[in-house]
Image (tube, rainbow, N blue to C red):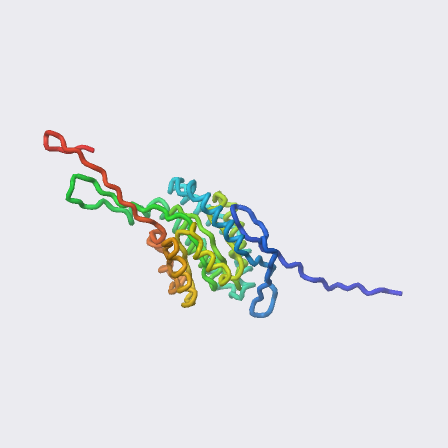
Length: 300
């Protein structure tokens, strides 16, 4: 008797891991979710990151911050440029992932190209922004008075939910160009490019721990991120007023800076500026005495 062969098979969904400390662990919680696009197609298995995942990422970001901020600004720019090179080489993959997340091919191509250009933009500013935000100040005493920017430390980022690649890069790049490290909560409904971008980071000479990317429900992680005393600033990119109020209240615990990027069109030139680097800088002022000499001149 002839037997029929079942030619149908189940699709093997990719498991997208989180990115912490230059590694790709699974969430310690063991929880996953499966986002769907508008046609109901399953996009993959995504980690539902936990409070412990967030704590681990913040601790690793803190440990990485000292050596990252100590690097020459020119070298930070080289690494950002390397990210652009690696993203350029994988354009086709990112375009297909954006299409899977409901973008048209034209929209996807534009977003990937603009993401590459934005990395190059901040690579160029990495060793130049100090000339814009620093100053020599006029004082009435016998001193030189200098104000310069210094990185704040660890920055928590709730990435734009609708711009899973360009939005994430637009917020991340100025933060690390200025010598900070960061922990990013990626888009919940459109996470594919965010996690795949971690593979670009991992191949771009970026030290482990400088950028950490978590997936999961922002509403679960925001409170813990805003409350964490080792996070120095938090960036929120949505317009949810109760969430904004929650962040502002909890951020008062260690006077962390709250930055609201809720009215930015990430597809325009207004979404890139050296002043986004300044947003996560502390302006430090140094006084240097001038010693008067007997001939009426001065030395220092």
